[in-house]
Image (cartoon, rainbow, N blue to C red; front, top):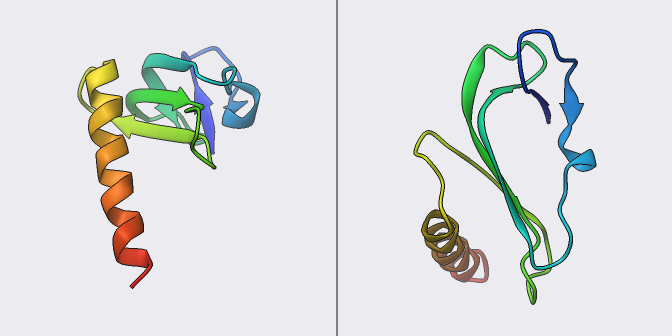
Amino acid sequence: MSICFGPRRYPIEVSYLWPQNGVAVFYHHVGLWLDGKHRSHLVLAIVIGVKEPWAVITDETPTLKTLWQYGLRFRVEELFKRQ
């Protein structure tokens, strides 16, 4: 996935933006995909004890509570995958 931070900035691959272990980074009003037309908020996090890094796209202003809620959702989805 590529994101654009402004009308004059070049797209950036999300893989270049991952934070350190145990850190969440909040990006507000970023343009998504190569054209940058769709704007949203992006949260990137590497949660300690979790196998894969998280990338959350949301239209709500993200907070740590938002990240916690998505974490609960991810956990429920994993339970259904195992059945």
